[in-house]
Length: 316
Image (tube, rainbow, N blue to C red; front, side, top):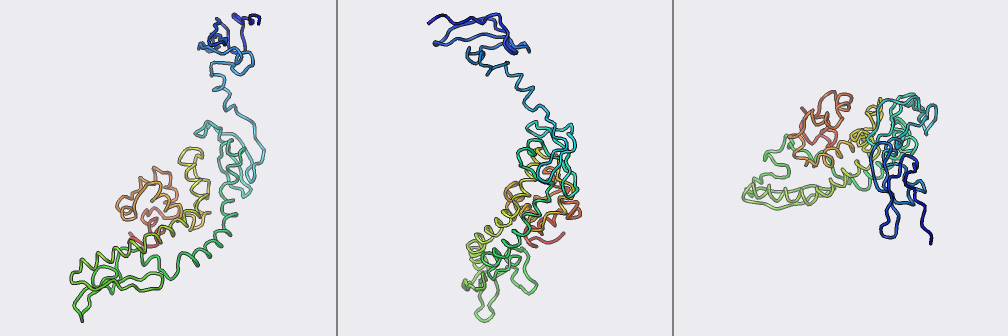
């Protein structure tokens, strides 16, 4: 086989060939890029055009602006580019939705179809499904004779004299009775000489009966808020500059409830008993949710707990 052509001295794309070497039966060229960086390039990569620079050319052209002005993507019409970029450097465009609202979306999310509206499409497409799903789920799996606020509240009812829900004093036998009601059934948990023993058995029964039930119940609302959670994560990551205008007025209370449960339990990893203690306005500001607090809850952060857990905590 004849000797290959020596490219030394030639310029190919942005690379000027300085010298040549053979290694492991392959030919390599030492090149200087137009940006002054130097590197070794395999001969076939150089001649095929697969390698045109040291890498700087790719950085310059990776997100070269494309003109999408006037083009429509589902319900959104691109109006003009902004001087802002998403976290992946994709240009963010000002867009007008069919519902007349203005929103800001990265060109990548527009062209990929990831974002199709200002948020109104979520309401339109999911409202009926949510309604049907709610009726079925609440009827077959959730309520089942169980009063959710009753099993999640911390305070006891006014007629309770023991201070503990499900624990009462038996005047005839002079013992403490522990009992629990769940799914239309009363469970007698026994009589005890000591109040603390009755309280302990009651708490054990709550963990066994209420725990899995409430976990399933809360997950249902998180599932219903999937689209809202996606928008929240986009805003938090910087892919979306901010929540679309009127966003908080447009989502349903069930979606909002699911978003709050997701925020408290999955994003912040807080246990329900710790939420009231840990909650403060700075948390919502940090996670870009203070607009929700101002718009829906009139600045009262504790009302978020009341909605998420149906009055579990005392109103402030």
